[in-house]
Length: 611
Image (cartoon, rainbow, N blue to C red; front, side, top):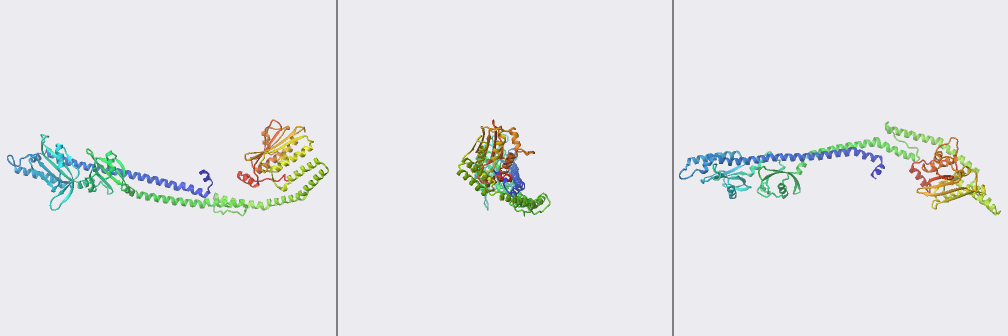
């Protein structure tokens, strides 16, 4: 259905649609593909960048943890630490000078680490001999639960969750701490504890150390336990709390490396990484809005490309309209004027290309037609009118009708009824054949005409001819060219019946078949002298000798009047001849003209048999 509608569009709209399809649609499609591909590539780059950053952050975190654990292990293997933990403080065997030397050495050891590593907050060691050494800022807080956890682990490292300690002194300040607790066992008897150590890390400084140079301002990094407890985050208020977005916690728990979630109406992309050897996970999140902001430049470039493509398309459409479509539409308009009979139609020629040459030839053709009309055709029409007037002056139809009616009534008064009927049939023949110069008559009148003609022939032959004329009800008003059946009947009498017999019969029947009216003329004579196909070929071929002029003339009249699908046709039959007439069913000349215009058949015919 759409193809049919497009076929009937004007050339202007067809051109606009085609140019849009060839210029704007491909440009738009390419721009959208580039936009989509660029967006995908950018998202992939952001994800890969965050994954790489997480690897660096994990490396920094594991480096700190390994360093702190190595410090605690160093205490096990260091003779100075073992002596400090086990040397008696009072009584026999005590050595205050040695103890002071050990204390100063250990203090220097820890001071070096505290000064060179900002995330080292403080440290505290305690030996079985009761000595304690606190290094770094003086703080207070409850750490008993972690001491008990370290004792239960019997020398294995215990890392705490974030907890808060308060600095003591002139100014108080709270610190969020992540600590290592460990029991120091005897090097030579690992079941014998000789002391314990706690090394505290400042969570804020640790976060900065891990994420330094690897965390974009628009990204977020979360260090989280498997249960959702936040160990480190940009927002200090979240540290030590359960992460509020349970969807993120669930995804991390399920081990998804990449996922998307929504918070407060904003979409985030998250990349997760499990910290090797621990139950902790690193999560990097980035807002979708930030990705789209980075894509703004590409979007603007795509918009410029689309605008340029649109401008080029409009310029191409305008140029195509002015140079091709406009001349063609003007030619169509002038052709319509010519079709309506206005021979002043002229096309404005703007160029010498093919369209310009077409316009020039159209103008020459119109001028030539006008000249021919003004000379040859006008003269011929005048001659025809003169001839028609001359014929009309010779015979006055009304005088002829009145004279025949007077003779018919005189015959009846003289009781010559058969003669009156013959005169009546002859009067009908003249009335229909003249018919005031009309070209078309109804099928009813044509059938009456041929019936009157057969009646006169029957009387002429002394009753040796029988005939039947039948017509289907409802088709009486169908139009037909006058004097179509009379040549067929005359052909039967002249050529079909070589010898006039009592059995000579002519049958005429008319009926409707779809959109057509079919009239069959049959006789029981000697039949056609040639094959049916050869006879039909004869009807459509000119005969140089002029034989069969009546049938061929009738066939040509029907074809020119009603179109190439109409005319005469010989039908094969076992006896005699069978000629079929096929015409369209129309009840007015207006319907006939519409039918001919629809089929594209020229409505031209002659009036050779008129009268």
